[in-house]
Image (tube, rainbow, N blue to C red; front, side, top):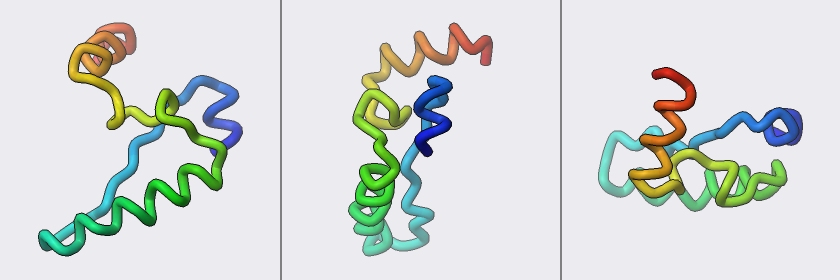
Length: 61
């Protein structure tokens, strides 16, 4: 994750939830991201819709 951060790669946190209760796994994902030196600005799915759209446009996706 540090290497990704150094290179400007955005990560996303995914619960892989198959039930509503599984959404609680987001806390685990956040903890792992923090251990990997990720901050809010490094995580794609913490962006506003406008920020996401801008990134996707810049990435030509």
